Image (cartoon, rainbow, N blue to C red):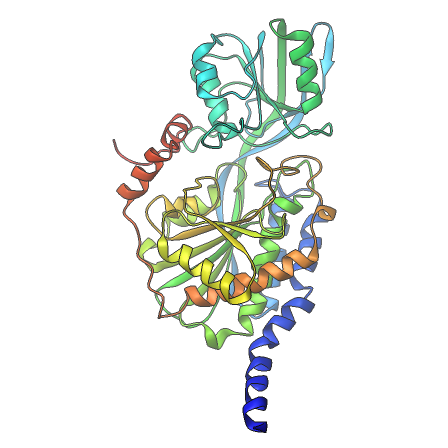
Length: 450
């Protein structure tokens, strides 16, 4: 009888040692603190490069091999002063990255949520358009900032004002521009919810001037790469982005994701014998200005060699993981298996999400997750504002989510879990069916031949 009791206890202890290590680990959190303490991680900046070097060194220190930087050229942009002048007043704002250095003026037209139907119903030619950063509860999909901007451009607007829906005097940032034309066509600024309300109340229809000063130049960014596991041709990518907007610490977006990559590397280094497929860790540069780093990687690597992608962008903001699975049933089942194994919820969303570093691969049918966390809020919350700071996050959530994601990556790397790629045609059909195609077409992000 004693043997039957002792043996399960020994097995449980061995199995759970790595879990205990994660619950006491400070590796990821320490890296997060290092990232947020950098003054500026804007794409192409010295701070972004320093963040990439810190991430490379952290991956090497936890045992990943071939930790390195891979540079690439980008369109650089550095903000100057911006302003809104209307009715003899100057209203506070910040430029949207990759706005042209220019002045736009015309009557202020408040389009509320800035839905496609709002642009159809109003003449905005020669106007300065203001739209909110959220969508109404009845609408069937999220409308990205860039889609609203290019609806304004296509309809002849002279300027663009992006109004935050989150209260607290927090003007939002976020880039404009396309891959083919990285600097936008008309000046664009972000204003707080409160300034937006004041503009709508006092000045709707009045002449307004939007002025943006910025330095446009050539620059260099870099991706961070490192590896663990056997030297197989096939690999699982574990990714994040290391850059952040220049107005805040970038803790939520996306210091936490890069901290998670380092934490997962530490965990998997101790479980390397469990890996049956190579795991490649990639912290991308220049995500915030159009997914430039991941697009560069996707253009220079063999898609057939990628078994799956686990892209961490939005983790730790809430306690429960939320995974977009992009129509790959094997990914949905794998996440649900891990949730069942640990008795810990993971929300899976089978829809497509074309707005982070998995997308340059997933759009061609490569299996990929966008791993976030459930907050119950529309949009980024504190993200892309001055309030994106470290104290919004909890170390507990990083540790718990690292346990779940470690086991998920081990499962994905198993020879017993085949994952079928999808065809680009199937992805394009899903984008059409989910009403995402129109937005991608107007922003220049539609990659498929008609």
